[in-house]
Length: 519
Image 1 (cartoon, helix red, strand yellow):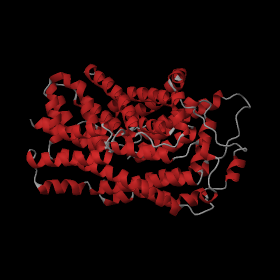
Image 2 (tube, rainbow, N blue to C red; image 1 turned 90 degrees about the horizontal axis):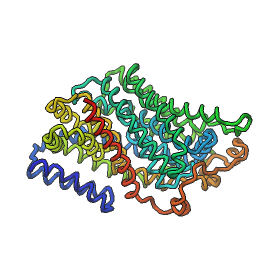
Image 3 (cartoon, helix red, strand yellow; image 1 turned 120 degrees about the vertical axis):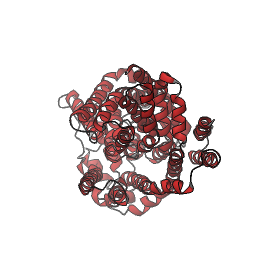
Image 4 (tube, one colour; image 1 turned 60 degrees about the vertical axis):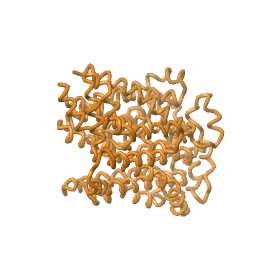
């Protein structure tokens, strides 16, 4: 009976989202359901509930800062024309559309997400995908599918939580998670090419996919094995970008390569952000500070806000753009943040009341068949919490206990939990809403050549630096997406969510099969 009640908040969320209810209202309804169940069946002292929510307050503030800083940075990159220049550079540097989209999906997104976490990879990737020519909804899907290195996101605190609560070695968990990530990279990469290029062109681009997946997976596995867990996603994304760019350069015909615009200044905001994050992380670690308000100030949220404030200066914007960009970002920020906070509160409530543990234990009672369901348990946590750390806090310990009861490898089942929860966090309602808003507001290549003078660096300077070239789409969308490209209609978040979840479902089925064989 308790297990059935524990599933109600999850069923309410999924059911309302399937009916097209907005993510915020679905989250509020699920939270209200969880509160009623807590008051009637999973009674928990108010002091304990208050302590748990108070403990989450720094995380909530950090999330709010990250979301606002990320949206503001994206807005500034668009208004100054930097996003269009970066998209043009990627398009000209890659000698094929498939390599361009794979560079963003398996290179840029994992690199950015592994450094900062909290969905920043999506904030960086989606404007680039729009600039390359993808229609908004498809850009949102590809951006979300690029969140494949979340076990190492923000330098792997989620994996550390899983290792501590599951009682397994941290580095071994990183290695096992890397091994399980091979089908994740391959399946999501294949789906990305189909969404971006259509089935026929995706099949023709299989060589590019294998190359990108091999570069990302090989580096992630090697770094976990020989160096350590935190930097695996960062170096994996970086190596993937370098490999794809080198192959494109080698395949260019001699003397046919176009003169490309210098890109260093355009990348300067990202360089400043990365350098600041790495330096502050080293300082915090040397001081022994692992949680609290200092980690918020010196973490991704604080550095994103500082980077956004300095971006007009770093890019040499000729006109003031920060004020108008901040007002536009604020209008897009509040609903995404409110939805995220509600889901985070729901995840905390499910954990502290024992509902998540009750659900996992009920599933474990079915015996060895549980191994097929284990990825789905992790996925539920990731979907609801929108965070690998939060999902592992919910379910890592119960997954480890279940493994011991079944006589199964604890390390392997915690790795299944870690990878599945990480992937599903990329399909959380808050992430989908954020991706949809970014895709709706990011201009495509058709708008890149006409950037208002008061909001951009001189267009004539950009054109002369690039040899007079104007923005042209690198990716030709599938025929059925032409209407979507030509009209400025809102992104269908239900289609985005269904598409991403369908790809994830295939991954979870595969992961469950591997778990059964991985004795």
